[in-house]
Length: 144
Image 1 (cartoon, rainbow, N blue to C red):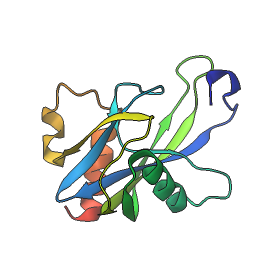
Image 2: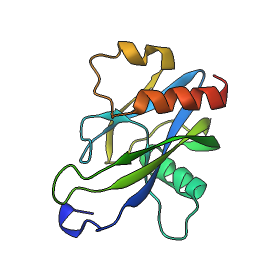
Image 3: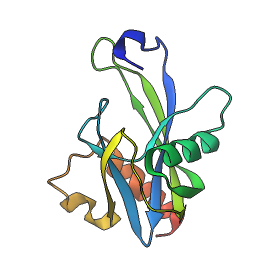
Image 4: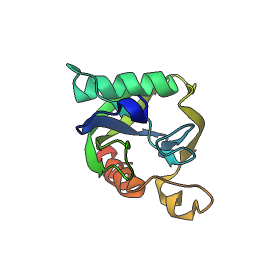
């Protein structure tokens, strides 16, 4: 959806902090919003879709992974920073990797499995706002 046909009301989105072998999956956005920033895979919730259904669909579309959703790790509101920019309520969930290896779609251009304790030392990576807090909350839910 381009800025020209951006909705005039907030959009609900989901993201997943996916844990595998004590590490969490970070993905880099290949286009706006947040182009060049590492974040969690996810996207918009479609009408009539549950949050868990949307999360599994978005993770599969973006990364090809199958996941097990554990629980809500946090949320973040992204307000429009400029005319035509989107307003999103992002519900972030803790999840466990269940199957398949990452195969990225055109929305993402890189991925890394990162130890949650190493996030603060990733100075060379641009992270989306609030990412570290969501990952630490998800880590507590997972017990990793």
